[in-house]
Image (tube, rainbow, N blue to C red):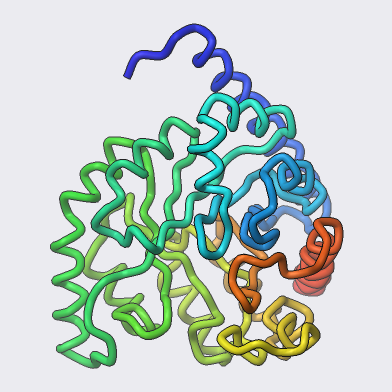
Length: 311
């Protein structure tokens, strides 16, 4: 790929701005919690279909250095890259000191990410989150065999991941092959490729702190994304806002301290995304942009308190 001088300059400025922001945030986090830090990333879909021009200034206000771009129906910011053009998008991100840390692409699935991985490289992004493919409800030898088939199917796609410097992280999504803790354990055991990781979503697993903490320690460094997200009252039916928000750390009943202890024990270096799904999809989790930011920060303060208690 050949870059003209203007494009190269735009992307260099974006990278420099994001690196500077990342270093400042890392230093602040280390000062706050004594050596171990959560590296926060903001899911663009938390703001619904809001324009990236309005989201980017909020990222640092959320204690983060990067954004996770979500496409429709959850958000629209991935499509905004195409509408704005990559150079304009990167300039806006650089002006706000924001990097693209992740692109979420469930619609494409794990076997149609080649073009998206090359786009990620151009945006300076090294992570794509997607779902797995395969039969659900498997156990024992049948589960192991199903995961092995998935791993075999991923081989040519992991070649492209290695070429582009992108990690493909598989989320343990409900109603699919990777819906159980055992399925994730088989995935890391059967595939040691450094460009295949896990996006760990406690929401989709039993709300058992022992199970969740043990799973974190078992899969260890293969976790590339940790969703600070609990089940609460779920996200599939319209609920009163106060019930919907129970998915967020510090609002629902899940105690995140054992999970954070496990993350600290493995010296977790991946992204942490404070997360929930609204109903309907595509709306902000709160009515205004500033309210969304404050809700994220409410959960971040809770997580910070939990970490300080561990110390």
